[in-house]
Length: 296
Ligand code: FJE
Ligand code: FE
Image (cartoon, rainbow, N blue to C red; front, side, top):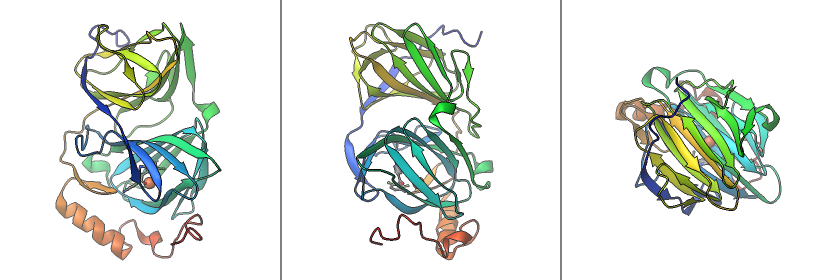
């Protein structure tokens, strides 16, 4: 039975994500993608971001991976060089396969502080140059399951009998769990996958039941086993995400927002971007509306 957890994964590594400046005036707590943890195959970056107008992430490119934006508070307006535009609000999801190339802006859509998570998932060599694609879900369309003090929102993959319609080019699970005081979950994770927990609110016991509680803004890399054991021993609600993915096992060469397999491919990408070719054609005469008047 694939849903049974026989051998819960231990916590192999714990990291606190401290705030740092990114984009223009934005603050991110970066866990994956920082110096101590460049990548966690197939994941390239995990940022818990916080942006208030006029800060944001003005026009910038991506190639070779997917960006997954999940809003926690407020709203972000995105706009790309093909005219694809929209606003992602609290609880909404944007799963963007950049493939051969996207140039876009991601800017606050309202007053106050906009908060969310952005995860970068690598694409395997055969998919790095595919056509860009978006999968977007409004909060009310993201299915939830509730049982015994546990609530799960299924962003990608399957949990507690609920399955997400999101297509993951790199096999991935992405679950948003909320546990009431005293609640516990056992969640299956495929044995060969890499998986992590990122704590959003409250405190939880992960893996070994004798381990110390872990609080918000901590990333936990899980060791080997067939699932996660999480327990809320505290008197407050616990919220965390559990993300897992099949490792690609390929060389990763990264230059900022371009992630390829070799230095030659990165050099080619910079050339493509600078010359508006091989997927970057539409960047030639484009500036996002949000950047016009932003001071650029
Ligand atoms: C980027 C620096 C950046 N984390 N979280 C360099 F900030 C970015 C970037 C983001 C980003 C955007 C949102 Cl909406 C949320 C983020 C980094 O846009 F792509 C590069 N290369
Ligand atoms: Fe981006």
